[in-house]
Amino acid sequence: MAGYSLVELIDAFYKEAISEQDYLSGLDQQIQNAQRKLAELDKQKIAPADQALWQEELLPGLQAAYEGVIGAASEAKVYAQERKEEVLHGVGILLASVDKIMEFLALRSGLVSESTQKLMAEALNPHSDGLSLESPVSKGSAESSISFLGE
Amino acid sequence: MGDIQVSNNAMIKAGPEAEKGILKGVEAVGKGLKNLKDNLFGKTGSTILASAASGALIGALTPVPGAVVVGAVAGAAVGTGIALTEKAKEAGKKGASLAASIATGAAAGVVFGLPGLLVVGAGYAFSTGAAQNAAKKVGEFLSKNADKMVAKAAPEQ
Image 1 (cartoon, chains in turn green, cyan):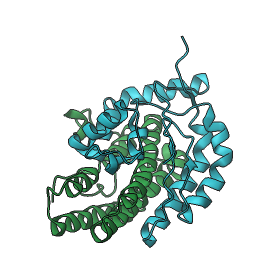
Image 2: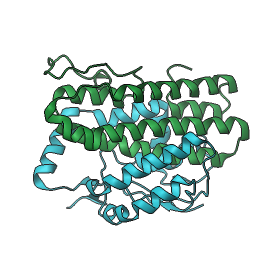
Image 3: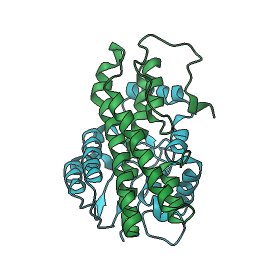
């Protein structure tokens, strides 16, 4: 179910627009994607000037957001078995928290260098497959605009 | 079900320098906040959120298709660029208990108290370990940073 966001995936299954198999497969993809991003976070090279904010807020925030997505998607799988709307409500609670964290991180991203901003934009984009390893510490060119911003 | 309270039209409140930096950051990120929604929730998901938010009936198990899916999420989606409310200060104090409560899966009646947020009255216990762990992590982060997420419920006129 490539191309579906987590919410769209759940919504589609709720509306019985997709099969259970596709639903569960799509959730697994969401989980794997988030897990991959989570694992890559520690490999990022961050500009010295951004280190403090990265360690204090950005990294923990991204980790919490990814954990939130993983948890929400995992919980959403339960809905396939139990079909209880309260399960989706629980998923909503987690996603609301993830949303808040991402919004906060987006705001705080404005305080770091361009290279770290680029990393953050990629990290916050759930449609990206993963983070670019070894994010350049040096300044990038103006062309290094964030892909999802150019829509 | 509990009521849902959404703080709309919130604006950032921070020290002058911090606010300047944050606003500059918002500008630098460009359309980021709006597109974040689209990317996190997808175009359709964002529409669902907007629809649910406009109805100000968030978190309730309504018969509106999709609304139930996003539930509380919609509350957070109201008002792009929102940051937090003055109430977040108080919410920050409640953060620890919030983190503890959702960590144990006891999310019933939780008042997140954070920007654009809401009251969720769904006594729901997460059944998966991943969700329980996630609730703990996000709760801790929100709690720790609640003070930085200070804004007000309505813009100054």
